Length: 175
Image (cartoon, rainbow, N blue to C red; front, side):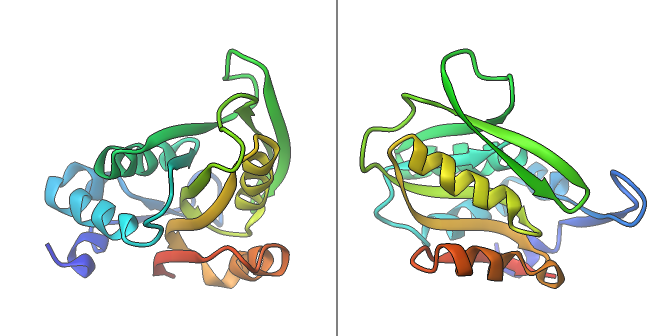
């Protein structure tokens, strides 16, 4: 399947989860096996040397776990505060519509593990900034970031580039 056709299955939902937010619903893309496979194949091409796919809760889990299976590498989840059962590192971050906190298990990564960091949307960059810090806290090295969608007007790419210019950041579609 053509990448453009696969990405065209993403549907915008206005005023969700609150007024003024244009939510990008990826469930139609995920429901189409050919489209989902095409997206994961594209994501796999960006960071060929990674050893672990780290996915950000919740939709990043879907993409990162599928990538891990395709590349035959491990998967590590970054979860919302209080969802992981063992000792964690934690980071707070700002969203375009609030504040949240992510955690990673302290023993999730071996020192120096090369990580592809994956999320569904890059907005302001706060979530990715916290995720990069958490991977470092756990001993890993982010060698690439892949997002399905980038909302360019919120300038998250610039925020990430200012703080971590050595990490390549790829977006499959920019809106």
